Image (cartoon, rainbow, N blue to C red; front, side, top):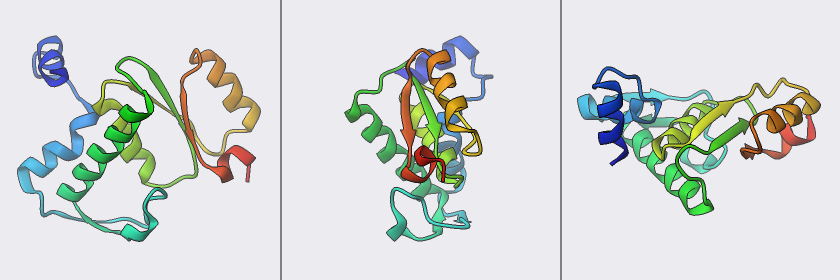
Length: 134
């Protein structure tokens, strides 16, 4: 349903971050991708994926966000250790119609807190190292 709505609004000409890996998988799901380090939420998965596997990972993350209560139009602040999984989390967030707000992990904690206020209390995805300022 969300894709139908987006198609009407953008007349098919929009860039939809939630569909990047899925569109690539439709062209060739077997394309290999090697990450520099494993995703933090699944370190046991390693660093070698296909585009199709990453699209599946995004769907799994989107389902987890939905189960946690994130809904369309809500903002999700991504403030975590620098890793490719930030891009995957942003895609998953957009996939359910929420709005990803990517913050650099280099930002001071006080700045990140102020941005939380300015974003009108978004959901926050972070990790221990970033939240402690390590």
